[in-house]
Length: 383
Image (tube, rainbow, N blue to C red; front, side, top):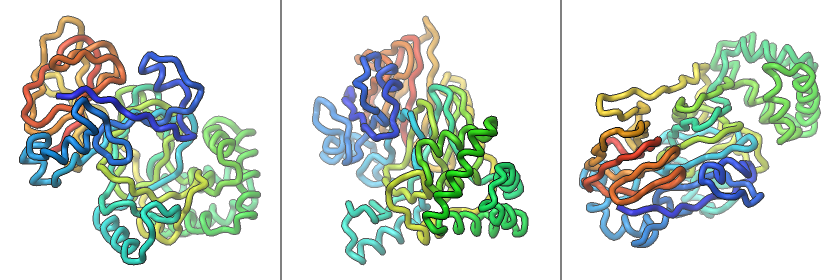
């Protein structure tokens, strides 16, 4: 078992205070967006034995266990993060496994450098993900019903939005959503910038349900993603609630602090709210144009006190223990690798005392007990 020393990524959208507050340290004044825990080569956790990816590479059967290696290969299948959004993230979607394999192979054949700004696929893996709120957390997830999106746009009373309103009313669900998103992302940039400016002013004036879009437009003036965002469901998570984001579901995080877990991939197709490359044809190939309820998840408690966030994939399994003062130690031994993260109070995992923001990596089958009073998240796999 190794205590992890984790990298904090300073993306521009990060909060300047949320992660320092969790860790109990002074803010630097710079944005601190994500703290990565895992073996991703972009920022592997450091252990006393070396970077975690190198530790696993030297002895995958010991570190990951036979089941995990047989199912996923000799690598840690998930990446765990603390995510702190101080401003909206890009509006984005992730491919399914087949799309990722096809897209990666195609870009490899065409010789597009892996670090090229117009490259879509960094690897051949899918990227399902789960975000669990530590504070109140706002986001956008999945398409609204077309009639609801039409009513929202119509309420702005902006002439250049009326064709989109008509499309949303005139077509079946899938065609309506596809045609409107295509039209928004393919519009003349100058015309769209004027539309967004008018829409943002109307949102600011109306407030209420429109206030979030005025804030998005403040961060991304003239960006077509402001209009695209209005096609999606707004979601507010309370602490302990979560969202699962599968392939093809457009989404964006707006504000808040959370624990995020995902398959170990970096494949993102952007729809807006970003200065980065947007590949509209490929995006339209990947997006699932269906209205759905965001499906807020609440953990399901088991008899031993573990609260599990159920998802339909095997690359990760996230759960938590909320340990009261004086609780008996819990046995956390598993035949799969684990990362254990404290987010509140003070807990002890094996010989390691953990305070908020601290974590350990536990190899498969290593005897593990947790005690203390606090909240501990457990990340592992289904194998």
